[in-house]
Length: 82
Image (cartoon, rainbow, N blue to C red; front, side, top):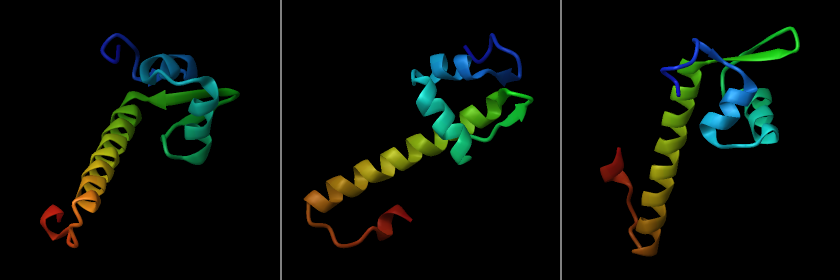
């Protein structure tokens, strides 16, 4: 999908791409977690911002998953992750 679109996405395209609802999309935009700007009343979301957001979100999810499995195994140190 990213290859077929312009350099900027609309909120509708963002929702379709991330498979999220409009409320979730506007929450991401208004919180600043997803870098974008408004052109009048319309949000314009750079494709690069979506790529960076998904990379960071996936990295955090992976770290949390590793941390939870370590906690279950009673590990005391995360030094090997650094």
